[in-house]
Length: 565
Image (cartoon, rainbow, N blue to C red; front, side):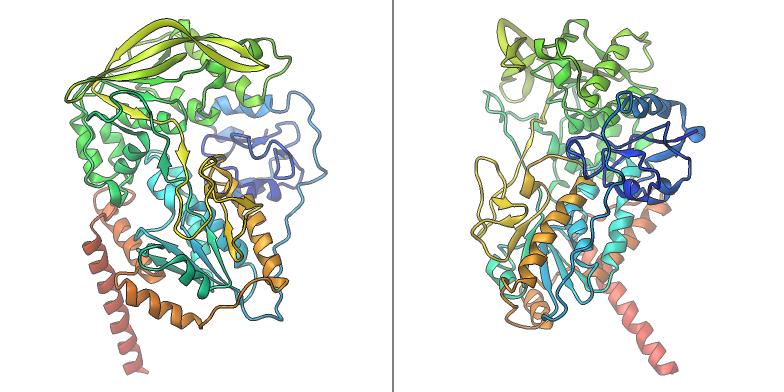
């Protein structure tokens, strides 16, 4: 019997280092680690010790005997990864923590952003004594896309915030939330008050769809829709028209699958999650019965990952289908001697989906379409449909290429959501590569900007998963500490208390670590009162009132303690 990695795998590799028999791959030492959609346990080598279960931050590893019926497909997915012998390092080398020169003044680092890449970087820095890490975010709440991007019905994945809470509780860590760099503080002011500034701001902009009608009401980005149902403060007042029976999502990555799943889910099954109250109310009134997910290339180029699609297939009350006319392989895939593991698994799943008996399990359905390029969004005052060119697959010098066939198709819809990729955005005072949409860097060290570093998507582009940011952060922090030890970083111009005074003079509504704890506690308590995981507080004035009340209560307790002692 073995343990099995299941859907919520975050790929942070904690399990790899915990495993005593080297049976979890790919490891960070191996070239396919950065592109792997999940980690896999070798069923022949696993000794069933359970060390990986304790190490996993998202409860993705399950003993074979405890797999649920929908999870049993992962037995074969894990086993298939090892069907061909692969060279393996003797054991994944534990990457030693960077060592800060204790003969120098204590290292002080500002991190801009508070998502996974920021928190993993903070954790790496705080392995050393006396290091001070100040995490800045323009939002009043932390954790970035884990809070505002991961779907509310994926609570296991969101459990990684428990790890982030532990990181934030370490000595030397402080939050400066609700503080916008470029508004309340400048980049240069951050540099003046720290040895280094590390940007971990992600890729916060969408790639646009440049076709006629793309600006019609009823058209939006899937990213905005995700932010809306997750209670992102910037999108609390957004309105999406759910009064039509069909929605179309252009793009077929994991975000597209998330959005389709939320649009077709039973709202009462979402009610116990942390979905925003306004989104839940709108979904309860929704008339959407079908979501069509459209990709312009073939099935082998599906952008979604195996775990996400496996989870979608397992839903008992959604009719999921793919048209037989779309089940076409490009020449390069069809004639390949061997396929990457993820591609092979996707093709198996799609073939199984095509061949399984389709029973009308309810009124909601998700349809996968391929080989369609959008050419126009139709409508006058509102979206009425999307026009597509039909493509054919061709050999593009050993890769999959497409050419239009001349055939066209229109899909009627009242809601179009685009999900075709992400872009980083420029930051005032920081170098930026417009073509690649990243901060130009060498292993995280920003080019031509001494003392400035980058990690996460703003460093490498929108690739990888939550846990991939761990190894990414280790590389960047290694460069930063080397520069500090070699005397290449300028010391702060004032002490840490001066920075705190400066921030509060510019933004009186700053949310520090204690303030976030107060918001977090209130959200959990409100959620528990209504049978929910948490009820997110979106009104800033209300959040600040909660913070102030908590601070006053703490002061009162201190006065009582002093009076009694």
